[in-house]
Amino acid sequence: MIHAISFRAGRLFGIAAAFLSAWMLTASAPLHAQSGDAGFDTYVQSLWPKAQARGVSRTTFDRVTAGLRYNPRVVALDRDNLGSPPNPNTPIPAFAPYRAKHVDAARIGGGRRVHDRLLPLLSRIEQRTGVPTSIMIAIYGHETAYGQVTGGFDLPEALATLAYEGRRRSLFEPELIATLVMVERGVPRGVLKGSWAGAFGYPQFLPSVYLRVAEDGDGDGVARIWSSEADAIESIGSYLRNAGWRAGQPWGVAVTVPASFNRGAVANRLTPTRCPRVFDRHSRWRSMAEWRAAGIRSVNGRWPDGNVQATLLEPDGPGRTAYLLTGNYRAILDYNCSNFYALSVGLLADEIDR
Image 1 (cartoon, rainbow, N blue to C red):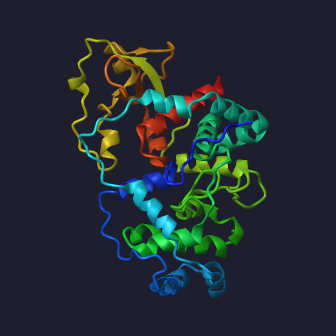
Image 2 (image 1 turned 90 degrees about the vertical axis):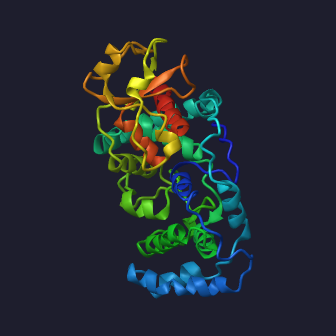
Image 3 (image 1 turned 180 degrees about the horizontal axis):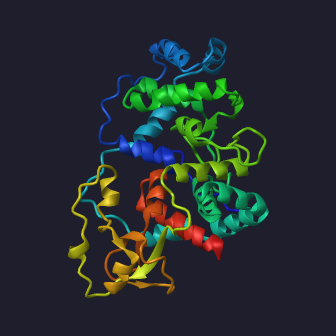
């Protein structure tokens, strides 16, 4: 039996975390902060024209919004999760403790069991998406402990609360409308349960992401990412493919860096347009052949094609295990813009493949 991943109510992974982190520096003061605010119902009803413009019927709108209540617990979790904007001078913790927690025996064993149980189906999904089954399974394991921890908040209520509260209305209101569109297109109202921030299902997609990339992996005509592992895994593959995953390339290679290596010569001088704390740690792009010529050595002795481009990341600094990361690593970062998350996904996938 897979041990459930440690999951606090206020902790987010994956797409929801990436969306929220992008808003940490731009969040304004709340427009509404009192629980039970009398304007909540008025606000929800004011969304009808926007929902109608997206093709939502009045029947669907009324059915989904009936009985929604302002949920102060959701707002409290939102504030606790975001806290203050990150201090760029705060030291980044070591990767090893995170890796030990997220690439552990339970998660490795659980991923291998999913792989063995669904192998024929997964092989077809890999052919369609171009994404290795182990990568898709690793994200599934990271997000919800292979379907064990998906969240119990009512999605429409949580999203309506966050939109009404107002600090990031431009994020959460479209997600609420997307939820209405999902129901209009046949998603049952009763399955709309997930995290307080609106992510749901085995891959923890936001509603807008579900509408954009969710796929039917088991051939029944419906993308049931909340109950079908095949649908969830193919949808993860669809997401990564849309994020630029290139078939046939690895996510990265564990390497050692010689003490004499000149890091200044490969330092990235560009200003990242997003996730600066993530991308500031990456070097310039160089080919695998160039990295080898500079004295970098693969830990396992294997190398991708010499023309494959990669950046160097030393998560724990000089003298520790480093990684050469391809464009496929960037696709994982698109799912969750965290080096620790993306590294542990890649490393878990490698273990599942062993």
